[in-house]
Image (cartoon, rainbow, N blue to C red; front, side, top):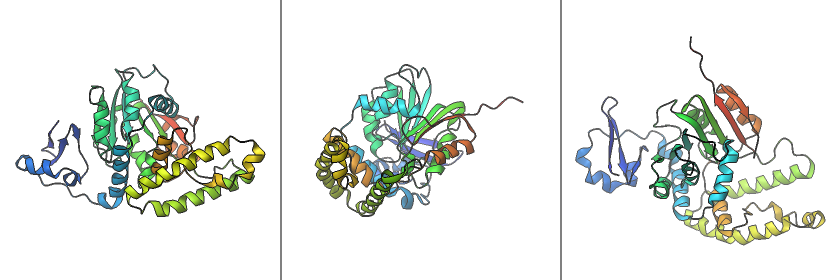
Length: 331
């Protein structure tokens, strides 16, 4: 529960606080009491954080705020998302070792834990790891680590299946984050990702394409404001957006002629999930992160090819891509 991980050869050490190994260079800011209490136990100076603060502090703060406040989750929905994004099926996980890049509050960790003896390591940048740990602490097949996807504190080629669902596009560079997690897959191991798609996919034409472009422009313009708001202010504004999402959901059910009449309202970018609590969460999730890159299927598929992955599949909700790390032949 409490301790220090130390490598004397590398002259580095990292704390374990509240059951979670903490590899972020700014960990002392999060747990000053721990460092005061165990000051004499540390042998080496803390490593410099380089550009960590500049690149990651806002993302870390927004997702920590999100997952430590929003308690809503739906295990049935989480299961459906996990199996669809990873191309797996219930009962098929076996004794594999999984890695989740960006585990948040641990909802997909629980899906894998249901199929023990499958085992999973979840990593997240933010203090959402505290909730992920609490949600899964009684399950010996789930392990939670706080760290940076771009500086993974794990041994390469260690995992049977590496996946990331809705996270890589929230890093400073989606492709670089993808290349980082691929290194963790064993030869023959699977890699699965889901990232946001561009507002106007290449296959859209006519009025649908115009509508998608306008909605994207509105959403991105609003994000120019919301990402600068104090998080508690944005949090409460998302409650205001919840009834708007309900109205949009009703409009979307109307016959086509009536829906066309209300089509300008459908340009309002907010969640239309059936549950109001999830509408609040999804809207906050959309408007709070600093980074929110969007990609095409072809672009993400190209990352897999460039990384030398095989058996690439893009079936399912866009942009979902899966592949297999090549097995090197013995010489």
